[in-house]
Image (cartoon, rainbow, N blue to C red; front, side, top):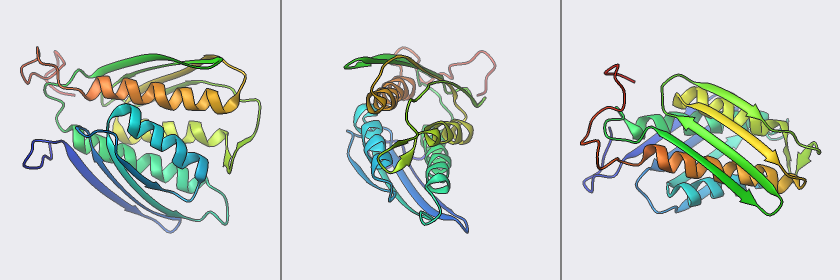
Length: 202
């Protein structure tokens, strides 16, 4: 796995298409420092929550065709972030692999469970009562998590158990995902660098 001299797990990925130009840098062993600019304000706010609560240093710069809508920018950010996470995790030797978190935010409660299995799959049990939050269509949150799960190789189950405020619903999901991801990528001191699979590969 890519490491710097301090042994931190790092990756930088650039993705350029006719629709977007996205650059993502991650440090899995960071402190939650972030510098995020996608041009979609509410999306930036959610990605900042991801960095802060996963304790992942995260830099994202996305230049997309926002004159059309935010779809391509959000989806391609998910793809690029997923690729960066996968590269930074490396061969997965010694990590916990699984993560889960049940998180409350005021009246909303959300649960995220994930497996860094290299078998991408998304379960999305989330409903919104509005079509937009800030400058972002609420349907794009599913697109983001699906793109991220597919490119990172994550089995990802996201569920909002209850809640009435749509801002709280999606923010509780991002924070729960962050905490679950933090758990999954952490090194397990009892694993002694072993791969967390009886198959011998992930």
